[in-house]
Amino acid sequence: MRSGEAYAAAKAAGRAAVVGYLPAGFPSYDGCLEAMKAMVDGGVDIVEVGLPYSDPVLDGPVIQAATERALRGGTRIFDVLRTAEAVAGMGVATVVMTYFNPVLAYGVERFAADLAAAGGSGLITPDLIPDEAAEWLEVAAARDLERIFLVAPSSSASRIAATVDACDGWVYAASTMGVTGARAATSQVAPSLVGRVREHTDLPIGVGLGVSNGEQAAEVASYADGVIVGSALVRCLLDSESPAAGVAAVGALTADLAAGVRRAA
Image (tube, rainbow, N blue to C red):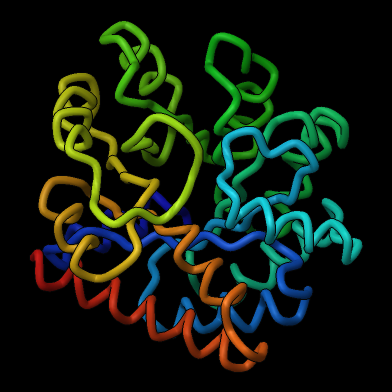
């Protein structure tokens, strides 16, 4: 399933989609798959498989700690693609989120081919802007892969227009400036950012950075098409006493998020 289709299905049900992120290989290869299965069972609509990278300039301390652990455990791009394939096999829309340098090192055409073969629906590229993405746009379109770019509160009208024009599937709206991380309150500028993006596209808009519970998910779902959660899910695994407890915590949080978007509906 493509992630754009997952957004459409959620909209048909009268609610926002829940998008959950975890880095591949954390806390281990098998442990990651168990946690992602818990996310799917808990009601997530789209799974973001993070590609661990040694220079995560946009990630906060929680995700940095998780990706460093995954890299120390030997996680490589092959493992990320295996993870995407396994999660797609669970019947849920699956996208990979990655900085672009690993894709360049792997080979853009090769990465697109292998991601498509794994059943991944597309790629979120937080540090790549459409102006510099000509090769990726071409090979992704040839493989029918979604191209998901980011907009931010600082984005000008012209930058938003150019970004959404290059997007396929949906648009990722970063609700705050700075690095990732769960926050006590949701962004006050996110609603206006979503409104500005809607002036330029009919694509679904997912809002990420900061959501950590069902109450916040309901707030974001009141104005966005999707609620993206990463750091809070990662923290469930980081803070748990055992792998099994971490998986249970991920499932419980995902169920809370799913209930939140339904309350908003």
